[in-house]
Length: 366
Image (cartoon, rainbow, N blue to C red; front, side, top):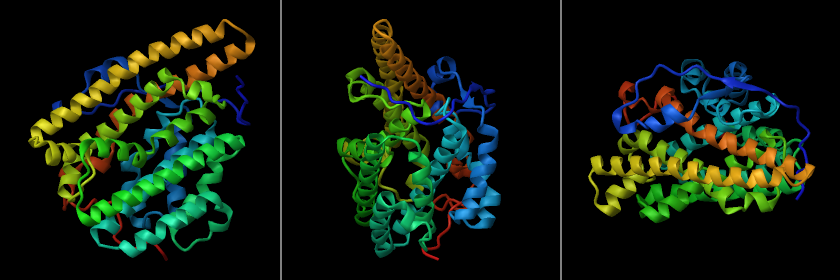
């Protein structure tokens, strides 16, 4: 098994001071607060400034909304807690990509709310094309397409062709899944729970975030590691936790906005649960994700201990896998605290609970 290195330099990370925020009981997870230490990348203080400048340059939000809301949304806090050890340039690219992803999600919502079906259906093919040929889309009139074309090469820079092909294939699936969500919004189709879970794993981009663990750790894991059942269980647990905890915290916003894609909404509609029972069920599922991760984590560590004792190559593979596993663990605390600090979920402070104040209702092309 080989572990070809990416052409990046190392970065260091340190603990982050615990946020002094109050977590509502329905959203509280004491296991996260007690057993998952929150840490942030050393480059974190620079990320907010750099991504704010990128938002302005790429016109992903109107200027006045960038200055008024971008810092309070705290998107860069989220990724600074995910990818410890990533080179500074890569972390900046991931921060911009994550911010772009939120902007894309907001476009999805606004196009659905305003019935801009033609505009949305034009967007998907353009994103597919920009993913395959970013250089030819850098000056696209739609800022969302041009910004995507800008960030994709920054994410893949220095990565091998196999990793890049895997990343691209995974994101093509994400784009297609967003189109499915859009059609569901137009027809007010609420997916059954099992169907929703599978769709959510695509629209949350589970495997994209898992792919990015590798360049963040300056390694490309062989398929034997990536497809190992214990490694996949750990990876899936981090992502399901993140997606479903987002659903839990987004539920008031999405009920107010007539959304159809939320685990709680699927449970209410298809399983006949009350709102209170649906919240409790989603809370139980996210708690189980933590338990599942800790069990899988032990299994992965046992595997890496065996690899480390075999050869120098085995020791390198073990170290790379442990780096990825450590950053999987970081997802829990980063996602948890982000949802209680970001202005994205504070519907009680909005003038209209169905209309986030940080979004623009304008169509995409300029």
